[in-house]
Image 1 (cartoon, helix red, strand yellow):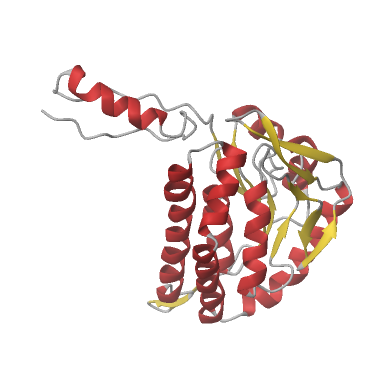
Image 2 (cartoon, rainbow, N blue to C red):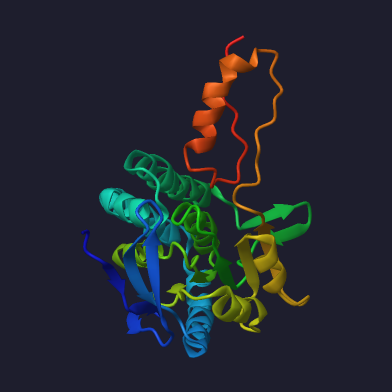
Length: 289
């Protein structure tokens, strides 16, 4: 039996600190065996994480874009160095086959980090339009709430661009697949991200998620998940939010090809089964004919 992954600590304000919530077992969906155990965040942990992100926001936003880019470039290097470890974790907690876990779930997020760094290096935060001066400023503290089906990719596409812009982040990963987020916190630590810029508070949507979306210290909410959870975690009108309240398997293929169905069916089948229909994206296989 594979050794259990045990994560009793949370990553808050640049330190690993014992979580104040209950323990949560993580199951490998391929074997239905418990593959990991984490300690969830308490309400006090969430308050501490938001306060840490709030305190870190000013200094991180004032950090020159070139220095932020250097930290994120180092993050990409760390992810590359630890790619096999991330793929193994995702294989165990999400169930993707090893090759898919590496190519889709790890290599793609690494490419996202690299592309974000390139965009940051050429992005103009200050520009002029006629007699007007345009300033593009970070939004503040971002609460990122991610789904189970892409446990590293969905975290990276929310967290890394926010950090690139100068915002700070409090992350609540999905309860079904939280393990990759802990390893990502270690990667941020190794990359030299300042304390408080990234904080990890796993837990249920009813406790951690709802507290984050309604917290007065959170300026922006980025949410991807199911419609019921999105409705329950809807932020109050005062806050700015972005989200994708979608079911993970809500993208049936549409038949738009003049080619015979028999020529396309095998490719459609492979495309849909690649991640057990857990990707909210419509496949677009190339069919002969």
